[in-house]
Length: 322
Image (cartoon, rainbow, N blue to C red):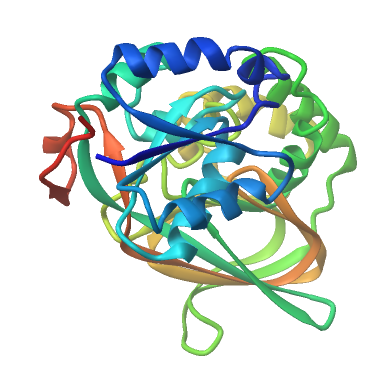
């Protein structure tokens, strides 16, 4: 199998770059011959993945969710049949968690040596910003409103370890939040369906995976292979109320609160009174999106998952990475 590993040397505050030699040794020990490519800045991972998609059977993202987002996007845009693999080496590692990859990089590399290939869903988001219409893909989750503002703040707090960075980002985002009037509908703007929400909005998260923001199980019932997104809509609420709900979101127990509404749909769109931040896989796409359309692409991405977990997936292919 022809394998390309795309390493983000800046991941985990530069630790990934400093440990490249150890990562290379771990791949050799696992019996995986790998060609290496290093990202040099934002967007470079997608370009490297588009090129690797033409010559590789598998492309491994070595980094955090931002690296996974870029590599996944590059593979989707590049076409071909290359599978996405993940070695978690970031702050959040939410998509790796959804794929049931081991938490340590060395254990993940060993798992990739005997991985199964499954076809999973991914998402597309289109939004209007002033007069422009833009589009992006996401592999794990997208969010708008407070969720995206927290992701924006999180980009400034990654020097802190793990969940601490995201909690600090949440508290900062609370101070700067906007709670606009919003209307959400099932379907697309061209083919609207039933209304989902009409009122003052705190945030929306659409999960392909079950967690985002570094482990918050905001969409605990989400599945990568069901052809649906789990859409969490949270109403505007006082700060004290938000802080009382937040700990429950770590464990996916927030859905019992009256402000939280969950729906499982293949597509939805939102119209907002004012522009709000928008993110895909934690990468901030816009700070002033007003009309947003989101839909799932069923089974559109092939990924590597640990051997023995394939029975839990709805769609499976034969193959391994060795």
